[in-house]
Amino acid sequence: MKSIDILSKDHEDVLKLLERFYESVEQIEDGKGCDRKNVEEILRFFNSDFWLHFDKEEQTIFPELSKFISGSSEPAGPVVAMLDEHRTLRESNEKMQIAYKNFDKDTKKFASEARNFIGLLRQHIKMEEEMLFPMTLRSLDHCLDDKWLEEFAAIDNKAT
Ligand SMILES: [Fe+2]
Image (tube, rainbow, N blue to C red):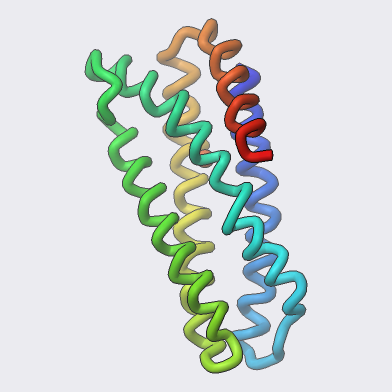
């Protein structure tokens, strides 16, 4: 399904970005300082466009998969855990962004929040790639693809 390919490509790009981010966090932890511009660019992304990906999943795959599992679009099966992780990631990002505002006073706090966010997001992507997406491809009607692609476009348009 093209829609799943798009979401997987997002995952791939985000994992690359997280690698760059992780290097900066390690430099901060080692007291070496870091390229602040690079960190700020990454933080801006995690404060904006990144969440469109979550919106896409929450408005397409999650309700359809829940419907397949329980007959209702109320979260069911692994969707419950995935939604919970989305919530945790949103909270973790908030903490990281706040900690960055105090970066000059407390670099360690920022590094620890960023490390936490990176770990959670890597783990979450792994779960979606290894469990949720294969389950979607196995269980759901691939005719949903066109509808989902339209919904993705609508979400992207609303953001611009
Ligand atoms: Fe995802």
